Structure formats: C-alpha cells, structure tokens
Length: 231
Image 1 (cartoon, helix red, strand yellow):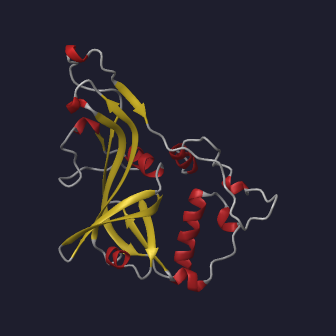
Image 2: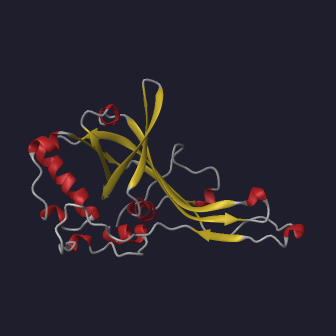
Image 3: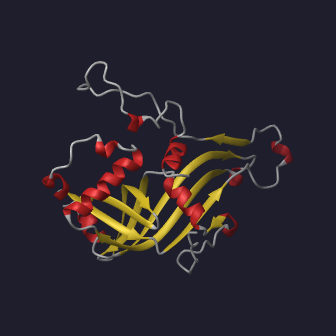
C-alpha cells in the first residue's frame, strides 16, 4: 500500500480546505490524467515557471528538455521546485457574478530535482515516456542514437510533499429571487481524441500500429491517460 502524503506549512491548503486531499491515490490519479505540467523554481532571485511534458513512475516524476536549456540545467542542479498539474472539468454558471466558478482537478508537488545521468539511464527513461503514451511503441522504433540521447536534458524528482484539490458540482451561494429567470448550472469541458491524420510521408494503406489503439476518436483524453497508467 502506498503511503499518503503528510501536509506541512508549504503544502497544506488554506483556502477551501474541504476541497483538498493528501492521499496518494488522489494525487497520482490527477497526475496520471495529464501530460503537461508547470515547474516553478527560483534562480538568482528570479522566479521562473516552465511548461513541459512529464511522466510518473511510483513516487518519482520525470521531465525533459534540451541539454542546453538553462532551465533544465538549473532544475537539475538540486534546486527546490514546485510542480503543478491542473484540469478544467467545467464552467460553473451562477445567478450572481461572484458565485461563478470552475470545476477542476489540480495537484501541487514539492521536491528537489536532479539530473538523470548516463546514456543508458536516459535511454530507458525516454523509452518509458514513449511507452507511457503509446504502449510498446519504443520497440517499434529504431533505437535512438547516442548523439540524440546526448541532446536531451532529463530531470527526475522524488515527490516529497503533495496536495490535491478539486471542485465538483453546481453553483454555490443563495439564489437572488430577482435572478430566477437567469439560467444557472454547469457547462462541462472535456478534451477529446480527434481523428487521426497521417503524415504526408506515410505510405498509402499503412495502418497505425497497436501502440496507438488506445486513442479512439471521441474518447476523453484524460480517461485514456488514466487507463494507460493503470487507473
């Protein structure tokens, strides 16, 4: 059984604490339903936030960029970082302006990043990224050349602390009798898989491999990702 996270002053939710959760299952479910995170750190007194692709293995997160990237080099040096992931699930439309809101899922994690070193360690981790999104595809592709791997800056981080937060349901607050004629409710927001579009260089009649089978047109993208992660 995976241990839950214990909130401290830096990770405990103060605003709307009833929406917060610190159990590992909730945190991992929100992480596994996404592919884009924002990594925040402070370098020489200046805050930076970097959007990047990430993936999770147990209580460890990975992300990557160019080996020449100043941000990757800074994050990989052992700086404390804060990584966030969020999903918008709906627009909450109320009968008063102040009660309008959004339904969402979000997670904030803390830790110290470090560089993944060595060609084989990088090659294994990048293969895991490919297979996270396209199961088995790493074996369908030609092996990456050493000079390709050397161009990648790869970072890993153990999750030291984490907090999740979500909002569900309709509008809150007392209805104004004068606004009874104003519609209120929820407008769901989803990201869906679209129709596949073959690259111009793809041979006629060549069909997508089994690694792309999870991406069925019309499927909810975060549901596909959660299923691939075993959720």
